[in-house]
Length: 389
Image: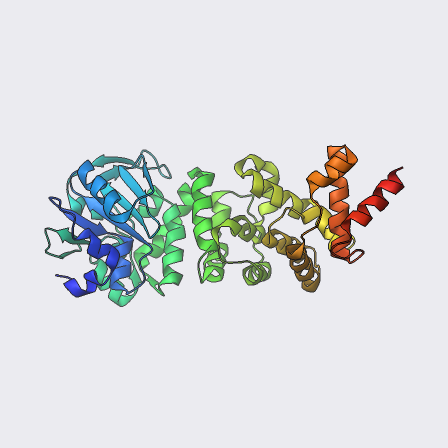
């Protein structure tokens, strides 16, 4: 099947690729799927049948690449202000054991490369050079896409890589697909090898969910299928109502990923695995799980959450049954905080850095509570010093 040039060249990013010459150059995978669905392209996957550093250099110049990295999977990731491009050599893969990362080797054959992938709709390629624009579709992905079917490439696919279960759910709801019977059976295979998947790989899939438009349905499906429980049995609960509220109050961005695991029993896992989380994630979760309900005033909230992102404060409020209006007021008033004296000014006045920090926090709390108005900070500081004496 030949893809019309007009449907390709309307994308300026792809049109730029037409100036790159190589023995065999293809766009592949998700970007072909999205192209056929008329979905905006957010990244670009390029495959070369033979490694060519000159092509990499040409792409860097054409797209104004600001960062280039090479992965263990024979893939260059090129980041530019406009798009992220993954450039890979055609490869085959084998899994040493279920759940392991694949071992990849060059195969010099685009068809073999496509057949190693996860789903038929992600196993298509368009040949850009030579400029034939043929759709390479060895597994029938185009027909599956038209019929809205999500079909695995082979039996045992989720046994090899159980994170494909996460992606199956994501694609189902993102593109309104139906699971083929062969794909449905693979969820049983995923259960067997999920415990062997590392935390960072699970985290990455959950991060991607957190930014999705239909994330509520995706997370609900994880709960329905007990996928997190099969990965680690500390995730032994599923509170759908809490999940609905989390979806309502949290922004659609990857950084809130860990908050979406709270309805699945994250607290138990976190207590035993704090080292798995970044410093900022750990700080947020310790505050959410470690603080009961204080005196509910904006000043009292500020003592705990002054350095916390709004989503962490909202999640804490939700778990502790705090009126959202109080949380909203605190977040709004905190955003307006702009004391007329700096911490450095207080240090010069007080000569004690630790005490100066305490005084600065008291000034912030007084502004939040309305005890003082902007411009009265110096007078309030003098009162604090008088009491100290």
